[in-house]
View: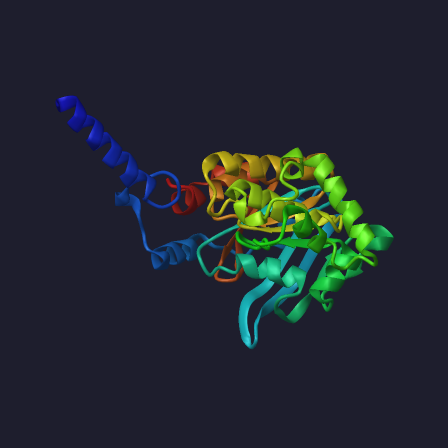
Length: 300
């Protein structure tokens, strides 16, 4: 009986810890969103462009210069600078409302850009894409946006969802050919090609979302919360897929990840945003060891 009580107590303590914020720490360490923002502002500092450039491997493949952007007349991002090289990965973390997803939205063309510029490409292929719309950015500049969970078409088959990824291609046959390349790469999807997407597991749906973006053969992947809503085993699978796309296919990846520890462990470079401004930049593993980042975003 005593052993049962001890076991129940241990389970309650484990549940208490699991419910306490970022991955580790007890309920005693929970702080409000307002406190996170306040404390984050205390360690925020102006990040020189030279420091940002030093983290970029080679010539920048994606570059943001002095970007001011938001929605309608509301300014969310204040003079943001960002640089990431071809085949590198970057993870954006920070408090809720810091502007992380707004950076992805701005790169892809979902925001009102008030000033500043966005460049994509190397050498003679480098171009200013600031004023382009999402479709043109995908088709001509190779920028794909992978939305948060639940962006598949549930009543369409897996195959039809992939075909939808090629909606900007000149001919339906081109989209179908591109889908076959995806099936050749991911056997897990190939076995379910005729199944409606709604019967897939959470991990399979996320794989389908990523794969659909690959149909247009993009060079830049904007990934919004890849682990959201997934069981740990599927989170591992998704990050293995992203790792393969970066290191074996040379994709440039810019992600927002609420699981800050996992995102920084994956990424070459990490940026901490606070109130629409850069607060800290550094290699992903360096930010994992940063005391302030750890205290506020990594669970201690």
